[in-house]
Picture 1 (cartoon, rainbow over the protein chains, first blue to last red):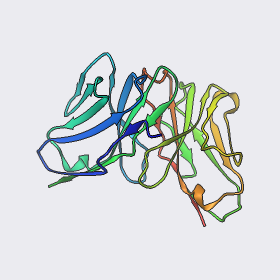
Picture 2: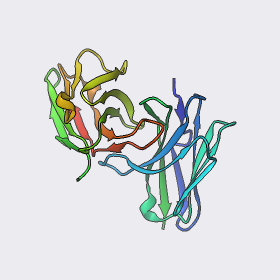
Picture 3: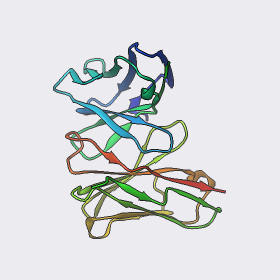
Picture 4: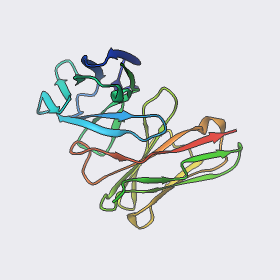
Length: 111
Length: 115
């Protein structure tokens, strides 16, 4: 039972353009959502999070949008840079201790 | 503090051997997690400690797997009688907040290859 889904395994974007990564979830109890970035042979690195009481959170070039009614969140990166090329995971958590991760989207930013 | 550290970073073993991984969390973090990641998948939850208490184990954690966190500091994950299907990246993460209130801090992982 995949509670957190990233349906696009890969995405290619030109440098300077916007990257949009999507994530869907099924459990309405999730109230906290996170995005992580992962380079090969490294552990995931936290990027940005959003609580269910908000619908948008920005941090520099990164913005996360949450649509609770659609059980959907997205990560926007603008402008995209070659160093953003990595695998991006979304994760969801409820008021307990467990974080559930999606399968990841590999982003390639083309110079 | 230098973050979450894991040892060894890479382990190659033969099927049937036992392996042990160690995780040192960020010092003030009382919550510690083990995840497993295989190719093309996201991190999958294995187990969780709050201080020294192991509060949950995933169905993924068969009886060949055991995790400990003595004294609520470092943790070890032992796999007995390894199988080829155990080949994966084993990730440790720590946090000082409840899920739903803060992020996990991950180590760089321990990659296991079972021949």
